[in-house]
Length: 479
Image (cartoon, rainbow, N blue to C red; front, side, top):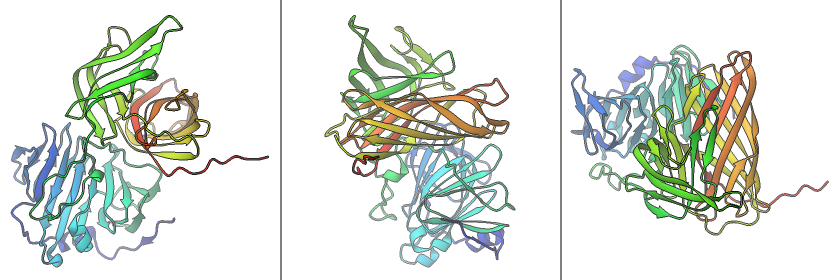
């Protein structure tokens, strides 16, 4: 579908002035969730820490630092802020009885966000504006994500409906499922195959619904998260000295425990030891972790500290720059035995990168599974701003005898960098199916590549979660 461009008839500054409303509420909303270290900075530079329940005031800038925050406005709108993000609420007005008075103007100064519009966006779309350094966003839909890259180019993605990107070059309408990058306030948006990589936090904004009465009830509606001990599947990825990584967890009787905070606490599995017995892999995690996601079927995150039984019998130590990535999931029930399905990546851990540098701006992927003979394939796309690398990786999937665990068969990475093509590369994937009727999948991955003409290798590690689409019939090609 082509993106249609229209000429601009009003400057971005005039638009911002047009939508500067009179405030109709004591506070604009509240903080649903915030990690320690998130602060609100007032117009005069005064700073205050924020936590769940803190009120949101116009004119304040939310600075997440190394943490993250989720904001809920009184109209039910949601904004999820990523680490190293600065977000300012310029003006806000909401009147449940008069939609003409409803308006909100926000600014993303740094970092990235994901947002779902509330009743302001539904009752007065012209009153909803999100400003950035390169373009102002207007809405025709309800959900979008934005990230500011290291070179100050801004990447926009529309998830639902459509959004209008306006700057001095004109207005471009971006439909659902499409992305565009804007390099400056005078440059026209360019269609992009990349998507902002914004891993969800403990509670994904896509799983939250509007309150019954957004004015009187601005409390959090949290989804069920996965907690407890399960005889389910798990995978972790261990960074090896050669720069590649290895997935663990593919064995018999896997179990794991997730705490009430949504974080993996312990895990184990047994594997055959060449006919001489079994080896237990896993153990207790000691240290601290980051929950990148937990949706009640899957949980995924990163661990910094010691993971007993991984890498060696005495365990291994992981740092913030090179953490232990993990993904766990409920056991499969009613595993399909026929038909095919495609799984689409919907979340994952923030990747870690070693070697040639890392400035990840996009990771996406999919799995194709044939339940008739338990075979399949995977595809991954990785964008790295360091060296302008755009990488595509594909490969076959080999399933275990139970049809639940799978591994890649060693695919070759193809792609381009600022210095030319990829001269060598490989991608590894280790994962599992999970949930009722194999509704979900989880995997850990490693992508290692070397730009042509250099000896500098880059290794990217992480965990990904996938959700299955409808199961179709098995197609057999007859020659």
